[in-house]
Image 1 (cartoon, rainbow, N blue to C red):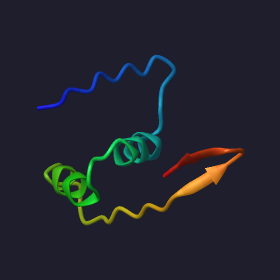
Image 2 (spheres, one colour):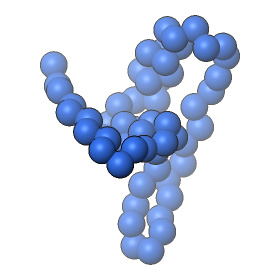
Image 3 (cartoon, rainbow, N blue to C red):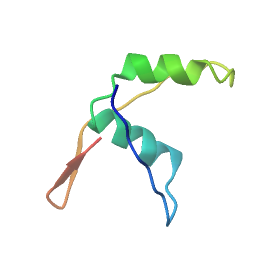
Length: 58
């Protein structure tokens, strides 16, 4: 089991957190399955690679 300590002192938006999890290696299918357990209605996760000012991310 891996452990991630997330200390969001300054805050973070939901899409940024999800993109970070994907960049860390969490599979989109696993993420969608876990979020599906929240019973928040149907949704789909769409992600694509991005590059801005030399930084790479999702």
